Image: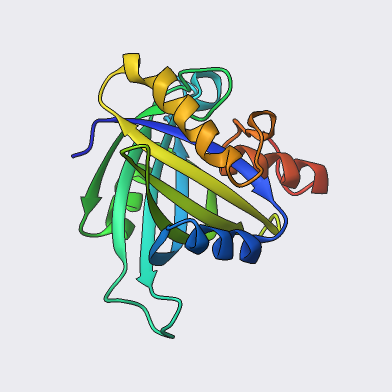
Amino acid sequence: MNKLIEVEVKVSISDPDYYRKKFIKHDGIYQVSFLHEDTYYNMPEGLRDFKATDEALRIRKSIEYYKSEKKPRGKPKYFITYKGAKLDTSTKTRKEMETQIVNGEILKRILEILGFKEILTVKKERDLYEFFYKQKKIEVLIDYIPILDQSFIETEILAEKEEQIKEYRELLFNFLSEFGIKKKNSIRRSYLELIIIELIKRGEFSL
């Protein structure tokens, strides 16, 4: 089980193919692509509200594939993830715990029986690149969120203790600056939050 701090910077982009080409030119290594379905839950009524505490609980269905191929690599994998409240004011940095599970559908049923409230399922298409930047391994994701019809870049680096957050955060901002992306473009809202805001505007979701 992973119990690290995920230092993460996310920005919106308009031309993902431009950045795919730039990543390869800057020694980025394409790893794999994913189709993710992330189903989010809130606590049973009367207990703490994740919206108020800025926490998250999700079950992820993950399908891996290579862009050069037309079929998935094996069967879907399932994960359960807990994310704590954001730890700074400029990024999405959080404590995270995640573990793989055998059957996501059974776990969903268990949560339902226990009174957990299903909030929303977020679907995303993502490409994973790996960089070694200033002697640190950085994961870079190009995400497409169909319901928003919008693409994003997420950069991530894992920290073992909170004292590393500032250093790693600045490392990610410096990395992104090499691709013309500025610190002020950082987005703190999660995909779940962005989608809920959009659905409320459409009149398709109520809190």
